Length: 291
Image (cartoon, rainbow, N blue to C red; front, side, top):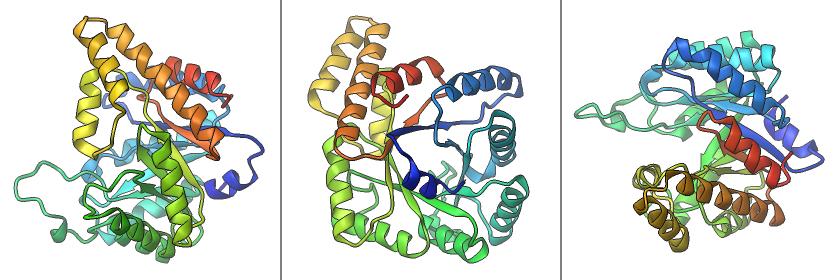
């Protein structure tokens, strides 16, 4: 199934999940126990992250194969520009075909912390380059791309970020999965502005359940997302009181309210960043009407 086609025929709001490959092979048994538990939510698909510089490329593909054929969940591996060459990408696409996987998420990826690293030195400098190449080499594969409801960290203006998304769609991308955000109104405005540019592909909101104040701070520093002031104060108060569980519960409760608001305002479903945790995702999906 191509994901954008599955979204088009979905009769009800759906949930999808993002997983990351465990670093140690010894953790795979527990990882797949989580995956099988989350299969009970009947996800439309699952995405599998891809390590910078191809660090976890083999793990990504092996896990994607197991999800697709053993667990029975439609799968979308991530693919990034970091360290990529035409040969590497072509080989990756051939391996996808051999595994019967028909979806890929094309991303620039995070810059490695290597001294002197520059995107200009790479063969693929942006997600747009990657989309163009994938579409030219694999017209049969559905391409997802990342969208930013807030201003893209590298965009000078909102308009510049939106126009870049328009270019990715025109280059062959089929659907959009947003980066995390916390204000559902940003998603509504983002979709509306894309429609104004003639971009009418599915836009799936990405929701990250907050687990700790430290994780929020790291996220905000990395992706530039905005967080409602009241939520941050609630999290900070619970953190200062040493109530780790209270921080987590506040994060889950907020994610449930966020998902409900998104669905009430036209989102076709919700893409949950699972952090490889089943319990919180099942709670969020269940209380949001996604199961």
